Image (cartoon, rainbow, N blue to C red; front, side, top):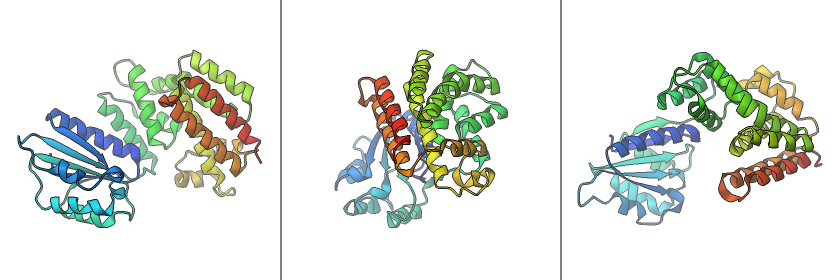
Length: 316
């Protein structure tokens, strides 16, 4: 492996994928991996992690959110760059932008392997991302299946990653085709999570709660239901700020959404105010944390969030 890697860009799903692949390679070499969040580091943390190993063991240091590194700690990296330890790999993660640019430029001068992680805007790029997710897991998917999945989920790469993981776990051996994607969405998302989301965004609390119970009883994971509601609200928020006179196909590239998703969000916007959308987004964000472990009863957390969302529609 190289001495330095720079994972650069604001698209978290791409950065996660790149880092996962590098970590797998390091583990195959029995490397000792240390991970530091830049904002939490204190003077000496990075120097200690980069100090030569007494036993020449294979090691790696991951510095996350490099743009947030305190000024006092940057010199530790600057001193290390010209003479790296041959037994150590350093992986920098930077979200891009001007913050921390001087340090970023210094790192670029030592010619790290740069892995670009900028947001994907074109449908073809998103489909290539999905194709590679399946290949990473040792599975193949037909072009029609990949296109169907991107059309159903939209441009959120984290949601695409979660959907691919679920399909990989459920689909039988062999090439994943469009039927498998349709089956997944009919039973797992389209007929469950997104039905819950549709009812909640309509302000129809009784139907939304019934849909939620039905979704859970038929095997839907509360995390996936929360994800579907969050996705619907993100679409609502995006479309609410877009030019109302523009056609959906004109906005598709700008918003990172399919035209049909824009049309649907426009229909759902009726009765919503900016204040209500903000309240709904806050409610589902809290539910997301609770469903993922912060609450003892994730179903109750979801029910409460749905009630808050339905009420938010009526907020003025």
